[in-house]
Image (cartoon, rainbow over all chains, first blue to last red; front, side):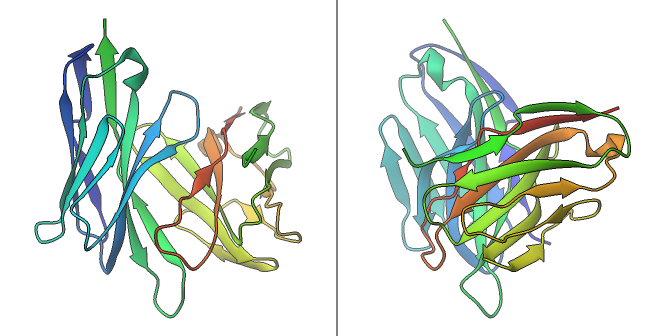
Length: 116
Length: 114
């Protein structure tokens, strides 16, 4: 069964500090891995997308890594800001058989709170 | 501005009263999808559509219907809502064919069924 597990479930850090969120997956056949940021009550917004051949991708203060051998990814946030408070969702894409469509498997997210 | 819109944003209804949540995108995307998000469960796909008149079930389709008569619109229909359909619903769209294409989400519709 395709699964995406995220840890920790929640995290509280002080403004200016760094943090790393983890994602382990068992999705097959793997196509790509995405990290989304979801502010409370709003739709998820894409941060990074990585395919099998990419092991790191940056978007400003956000850096995602991917180890396709161990099926693990991490999202590192540098110099956190109050606006980083959100849920961060790891999403793994698998190609559906026989077409160009992809099935997304969503993790449950890590709720990050950045305090002043 | 490229966006996915949903209406209504908030809805409180009673068991059995048919309702429709609309979704529209202005990016000419082929693929559209509906998700529900519940505490502790993450996002789960209800239905998806790969193009006009092409729809298919996701992981949790029971109690829902969809239609895709136009490329830009993908309404979600609850023929006889029940309290277990109380949830936060998201519509999303993306182009087809490119594996790294971003999926764009709407702002969400919070539905309460009493």
